[in-house]
Figure 1: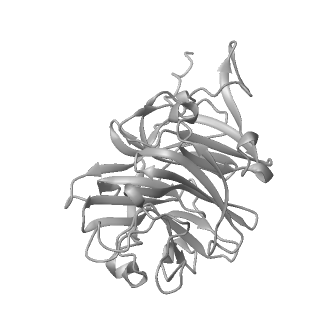
Figure 2: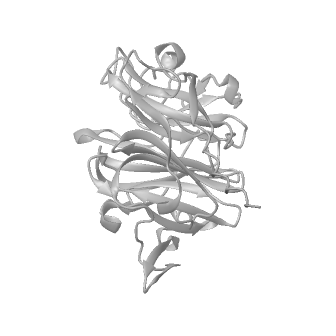
Length: 332
């Protein structure tokens, strides 16, 4: 008898998503002098609270209002992602700048990542006029993000600018794995990979690159891009559930994407890129369709079956906020 025809491979599950709610805005964070803010990179603090590290923050009637600060820390004392409410901030009654930044000449300090190793929080900032990164610097906190100590900095032109924006996956093998790119959505950039021991994250000399040379990939080679050259916005790299997830703002076409893979050194050029947040126009938002989305930072407590993302939005001076979205159906 004839053997049965081979079965077709199972179609990937469709990625679906939904807005959980706004995390910032006049009603949510206005009482902390932070009605207008973005990014909201989330980290679980040693005391169990969830800290959202935000970018350019304003009081008053809209973006560009008074009391410009960046970065700031907004806090949810209850980290339950189904009941997430900002009920505090670094600074007491009003959110304060976490590090010195006077914005002289239009400079600012944009966070690209905040993460925990043990009881210590680490914060990476891109400094200079936005999208003209003069240098990036690195800070740590041992009091749940209330105060920050300077550790080190990197020149903005290191690795051709592709070391400006960094994101850290804290692995259980003693290393942090660091993906980096240019911080400018209009400039095509490679995506570089380094590793650094947990205890040496504040030592620029301890960052070891991953690169292709002499017919093979190896640690210690000059860094080469792990997933092509393209225009990217924010990037977020996390160790989660025994695997790794990378999310990023993709510019062409515009969406927020995710990749799930087994190892930091997995071949990302053959790893499926799954759109998780899609663009739309104001007034047409539903499901995982967001007007003018960016960010896309993974919440601690996420799973691959229920991925939670901090998604930012900015399309006029009254629509500038951080939102929580949930994503289902991620493959990998």
